[in-house]
Length: 422
Picture 1 (cartoon, rainbow, N blue to C red):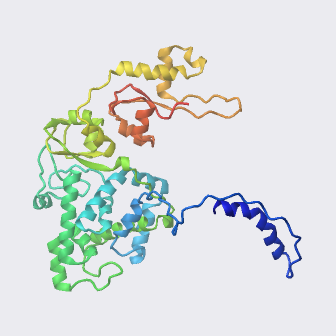
Picture 2 (picture 1 turned 120 degrees about the vertical axis):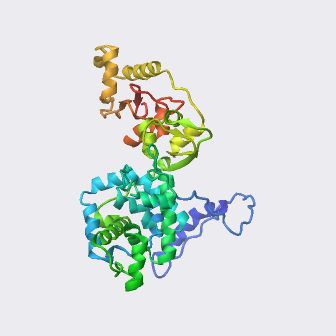
Picture 3 (picture 1 turned 90 degrees about the horizontal axis):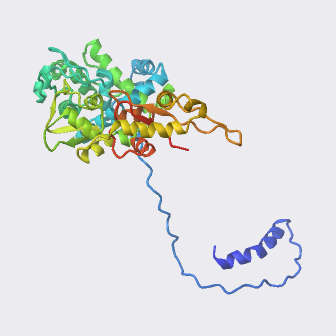
């Protein structure tokens, strides 16, 4: 609406309302014409420019559903039965999914890369619950539960101090490559899962003898053991939950890009301890993402798998750890200063311990409402800034900002604020 229209609108509204009041318009007394100020000429625009809106962030689960290829929830009654079993305790199921979501996302990225049905990113849920199962003699290992003979076929090293079946990057790449080869041979994603569980050659012999499946919407009607059938049913069940989580009264957690796993190349060999220090992770966290190393004395020579925040820290190069006693004293003194006088009266040392164990008690504002709590955390042995951030559902960047940290390195005994100062 230009300036001329805005000036004429007050005069035109009474005329419009009068015309709409009845079937026969009443005569309207003449009014002096409104004085209109000269209007500056405006540029003639044929098409109004469109507003530029930022692209909405992609939803990981929606993208994953788009890559599904197995039959859905109604394929077999046992699929729904297992889906309900998995979600019998919704809160626990959601927590379990949240804990392994970085691994699910990483496996799905590899599946897309190899043209594998998206359901197979969920296969470790059936095999191991995404746990890094250590391999014993002639037993399967890793989250994909790879047998020693299969590892040799895939070219994965299995040694005393290093087992590539537990290497998330290499084992996932090998399994997805194998899945694609199975599909190229079998032409049915259901049979791909059967081959993974029962063996490719045994399945091919049965298909040669009995023929391929005739039903495309349910379980494949080919001879298979009960355990193999259950394996496929379980995979379809967890995929069924992802297809329609509301049906099972669960909510799938949102993917945090900060937790996305990245492969970081190592320029020169270094110990696990050096890698942990450079990435800002504890040794336990570092080995959790790189479980192929069977002891803390391993040497990293090629690459590491790290969450994004730790990967960014690692790429900055070696860092020097801060002087822990001074850092603790500075943070603790600031925290003690904000405590009620009664608490501080017990002495600074005792007050510092109190800060590390409990949250600050809220005080009353003049308006009578409680002020937000400021929560503190004392770093325990084996903890890293990343693990603390994940446990308390905040970001590493927030922890660094709230505590004026220049690096992600923290030491046992250090006191951290888990929320912004007032």
